[in-house]
Image 1 (cartoon, rainbow over the protein chains, first blue to last red):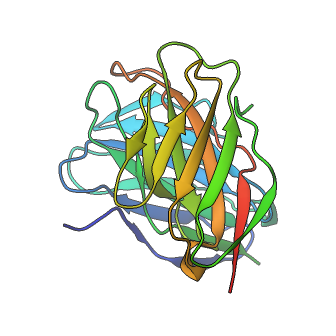
Image 2: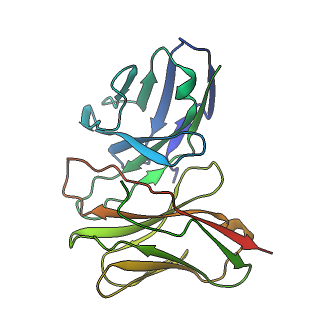
Image 3: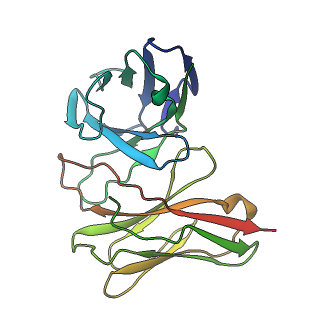
Length: 115
Length: 114
């Protein structure tokens, strides 16, 4: 039973390029969450999506960042015109959306380095 | 901001029980206590959660005080691979839709000594 999958595991971009991070939730899960962990800092919630809908994007930077979770395929976190401050580990989590204790399970993360 | 307080670091001898405390004095009646851990640079790993009763699974036990203002995560026989940052998180009962992101604090860095 595969867990949450993220790719690529490591991504290097030059300033001004675009970064696309992918997340495939666990089988049977329809809810996806993205978190960012800056170097030497804690994990910060970015966005919560259900299929084709953004439910909560209160943690997303206002510019350059976007997320989607299409009907088919993985969830994508897109960062346009990357800057050095975007260098971080980006983690995706998924859950089943079951009312009550809807546990989130995390993927291994994508480490983005901006040169 | 995180609604929990944890000691920044703890040591434990290999083979002994590791007891990690967490204070959540402002917890509401519909909020659960969740524990995750992050082993160096890996994705956070779910450990256990509870509401008001003590809970046990194959990884750990969770002891919640009767007033629910604090809890203790117990790793019964710590190994070197248990060295990690442990996060105690308070999270509302999920009712579908709405804000549901986890709020991570700084956690406790547990170091298992050989």
